[in-house]
Image 1 (cartoon, helix red, strand yellow):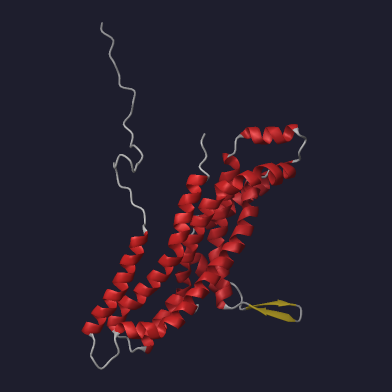
Image 2 (image 1 turned 90 degrees about the horizontal axis):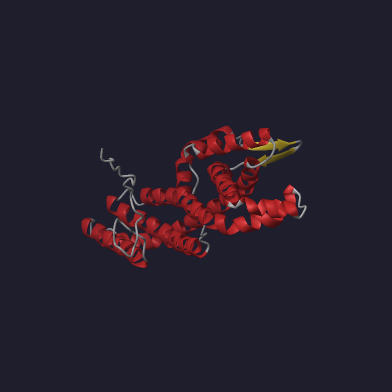
Length: 282
């Protein structure tokens, strides 16, 4: 009886490569920013064509409100930097807790990470805005908690959880020989972490950390929903002050889009560069 042959190789999807041209490979390029600028100018001219000649053009109106919108955007950056700083510090401690030898600490850190990592950012923001008190009393002192500070705390919660997972993944990605080599030198676990493991994890953590910061920066516009005076809130106030002219919607929001693109695009390109530079070859 002739032996039946079976095909053992299962069909798999090949990775997208730029050399072969197979699949879909899309990366943002500088000319995409020029397209956004062109759209902003075109929408301004289109809005001017649709408006009455008595009113100022959409572009002139946008230029008049630009200083205020830029101030709001700077406030967005302040929120993003502060939330990233808090989330990084707390998340790093939480990530180290996930690899702790203490079972209770490890389970608690894992539970907090999974809860805040899989919760909607907007829900966490509302949670911080409405459940945190307006002020904290420490004896005779009263420390106010303004809305922008609550927004920072609310946005730092998902950042904390994602940083925790980045730290845990970077530590566990190192080969076990690093731990064994440190143990052979009579290093304690704390010395092994601070002197051997974490320095090697920095280059593994930096690209996803930068990518997370870029996502956080774009998510700061959620603070407008809870009344924080950032760029989206000021844009709405500027449109309302202009009498709700519909031809101003496209140029104003295109300008906001352009601000975030100019700030986040270099971060994205730098992240790609660091991923290639720190690529780990197994």
